Image (cartoon, rainbow, N blue to C red):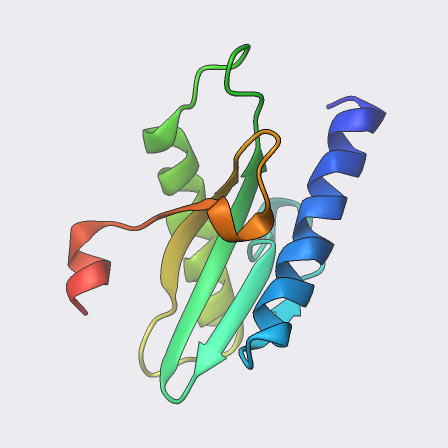
Length: 117
């Protein structure tokens, strides 16, 4: 990953954290942990824990690999849940930044089973 791509990802993570907190949500950035990475951002509300894998892609130049993104989010939410011995596993989600759009216009990708939960 290039330095500019890493910078864009880091900025997106920080902006999302700020956006969620400004709306009263409890959210934290997660530290990178290599093969045991736990995602980029966690949001909690009561017994609900959502672990976000965040992606920044240029819509016109990059194909979005939604299945790959979600598979990564599932693994990382599992790492998060295991590390904290959660009774109810964290919900995996993918947060995708839209080019030239504000944070509130980002997309959240969930599995249907997690959405229903």
